[in-house]
Amino acid sequence: MPSKKKDTKKEPKSMGQRSFNSGYSVGLNLMSCVIVGMAIGYGIDVYFDTKPAFFLLFMFLGIAAGFRSIWYFMNAQAPAKPSSKVGEADGHDPGEGDATADDENQQSN
Amino acid sequence: MALDPLHQFEIRQIGTLALGQFELAVTNQAVWIMSSTAFLCALLVLAARPKALVPGRLQGMLEVTYGFVEEMVTSASGKAGMRFFPFVFTLFTFIAISNLSGMIPGSYTTTSQLTVTATFALIVFGMVWVVGFLTHGLKFLKLFAPSGVPLPLLFLLVPLEIISFFARPLTLSVRLMANMLAGHILLKVFAGFAVMMVGAMGFTGLATGLVPGVFLVALSALELFVALIQAYIFALLTCVYLNDALHMHH
Image (cartoon, rainbow over all chains, first blue to last red; front, side, top):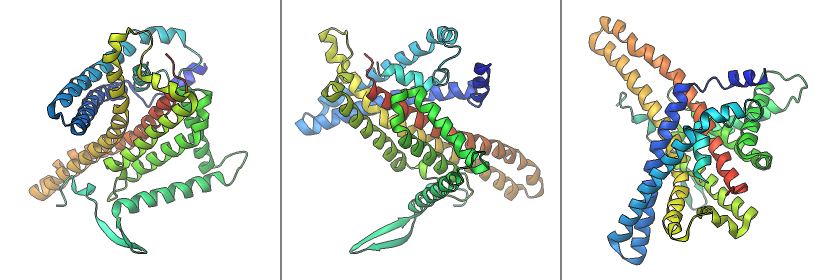
């Protein structure tokens, strides 16, 4: 019964909205990783006066970081869903269902 | 100009505030931020004042919000995260009020400016650093070095970790800003359709203008929902980041 109550409470976050948010955050993650990588590279370049070298290096590192976060996100999505549904039927449901939180949690490991 | 969907985001100077030899420009953005802060403070003080055992409407609303944020904090960052409850509660309520005040027709949406959301995100980001170094000392830097990875791979992985860590404030601020900006542009565009149809087709335009009008009503409802959900996501991600700083699980 308690779990039922929690489900109704979480209802506003519908499936469509949730997948929209997670898809949105994946794209945002990729974009901002590339931008931050380029910014770091540009900063190093200006400081050491090595114009294109570090900019390019960190741009590729940024792209790699972005794709890595997508990879983590997919790993957090696919296998975790069914098992965690069974395992955590009572207990700490609220934080678990949220895709964005899962993604960010996973990313930090 | 009235139909320009970007006109609503323009920052205008309303007056000047003379402080000694400094002259501060008072913009519509500053006015809206200050008035939503004042409104939030007044609302919270009024809601918390009765301290009734059986809460009235206002107090009930406050208690529900409190419980909601409390559950969010404890589920995302555990019992230790409750130290940051005041911060998260302030962040959540302030962003929610700012987003919602943007829904008043003719108002200015403060959270649609990157400067505002980036300030929030940088506060959160700085707080993560401070909390991390206070609780773990220099060991906090191990956050960037995943354990159990061979040394050569670390040269590749550490820059990646640093980049994705520094991408966090950017994602956090852009997410909120882009959602509010896009939503309000969409509202304005649909409102513009309705007005233009009436203007162009006269009497028949009244009938066809109803179509974007109906969409406008639906979009307004969606926008109200997005305003709250974005405040929730911002506060939740704050909790998640603070959780990383509190318990470094490796």
